[in-house]
Length: 420
Ligand SMILES: Cc1cc2nc3c(=O)[nH]c(=O)nc-3n(C[C@H](O)[C@H](O)[C@H](O)COP(=O)(O)O)c2cc1C
Image (tube, rainbow, N blue to C red; front, side, top):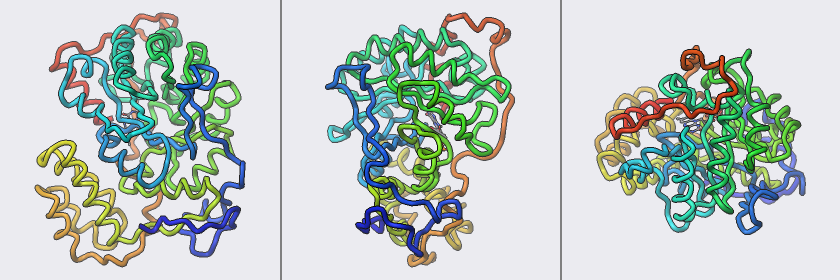
């Protein structure tokens, strides 16, 4: 794999750097410039503190950050690899798929799980159980913009009500023992209803060990540019570490974000879709080395096959292959001739078909620079956020919103969350 190191501490960019124009002149990290991320420092017993170097976190992504993908990413470089969101009700009712999504392997350390729930009793119970299972870090999703969720007062609607947010974080922290709890949120509902500063303070006051900020509003979904200045503002407001999130597409974006905002670590989402080697590049730049070029197409086919096999091992043949379809679009993005075969890739019934479908593409083609910042997974739509009737009239209310209770309701809910 061509993410090998070229040991040149403090190196200046070489002519061969594969980067978009904003990153061509960015210097790799200088010795001591960045510190490891320490989650739980001063909040949990020292034995529970999770130290992360480089200070890089794989974003929780539904339908994406299962054990198969996490294990691949981790092989490229160290970091904190968070599960996709696990719904509290589904987990507590022993839903088979939820349990699979929450699963891990003994070598996955630290083990990190993102939970989704809006009922303090459920959250407390779930957290106790996950801690008993040996989880090392817990995050709660308070940024989900999906209408089905916000319309019921969940997800990104929660930070509008700091007392409700506080109650949920408290329920987690009180049941987490030595395990650090972090909160992930967006800037707010829309530009005229920004909630992140008050919500961040409330989370910190309840013992959260860090706050992750996806620097977009719920109305923005994934469109436009993330507002890194908001990350900088949150760094000024809070004492606990702030994790910056939004638009880290290339390893040098992470350095730029940390330099511009002073945040303690970065959360990487869409940039790694079909590019797990990005974590190798991140490790290189944080360790002061110029990363090698990304893999050429032929190597990427091997990565893709490996990924497919891991998905089949986790989910079984039928579901694993179906899951792999979307990944083939991300892995092949931008390569010559890939658009013409994408339709067939979206219909594969076996992993072996992938090889034959891409057989005519050039294995020597280098990774296209245009694919570095190409939109992956989510489009550029925006939305008008749906909130419960009268929701904004009672912002001091801490009553938990109603969530799904029956298995059918939970399944419908999880499907909607996967779409978000
Ligand atoms: C396919 C997909 C699924 C996502 N699922 C979750 C999730 O389960 N929990 C969560 O907190 N955020 C979720 N997100 C949001 C990401 O964690 C991240 O905040 C967002 O993509 C912005 O980061 P980026 O600009 O690096 O992509 C999801 C994003 C994508 C693209």
